[in-house]
Image (cartoon, rainbow, N blue to C red):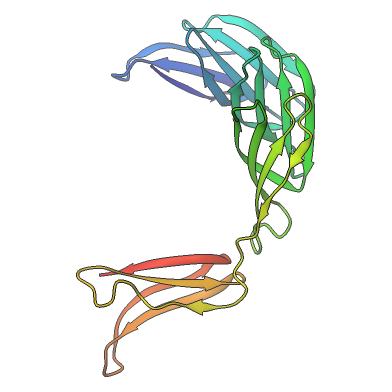
Length: 232
């Protein structure tokens, strides 16, 4: 089945459909906010809502017919992006606070907080639990986010969310570079790669041996990083 969560008149809305797209149920719940993080389990669905202005986050669990199994108001305001189940029957929810900080909360099987942790100036993207029970989280720095984004890979303690390892990969090239296209010669497609140490206006054109312009492949503002364009 398919589960869709969203908002109806500023209230959380949940719809379940079969594989043909027919609606099994569609329900609006009495709470301010909208559903964004959905975890489908064998016999139930967990929805974490976003906090509307002045409202609270809601942990809401339904059975396969949309009937509420539990709902728990959570006082901390954040936007929940991803929820995963843990081996002890609880949940981990990754989100973002309004002060541009990454937020992680561990709850029990009924949505009650066990612990929470804030990671300043980070935007969390993905969450997983590895073989030894440690939490693995990826994110991007909010500092100079659009100019010098930095990828973070964090390993967290499962009982507290504190950082146990933080290898950081800086993916910003040190200088402008335009590389030889490959393959060369080519038929029918070749790839052109280039590096940008900062956000830049980029124009990429192809000329023939007479110096005549053949085609303009690119003319745009691009973020720092490594890029590639195909030419055929």
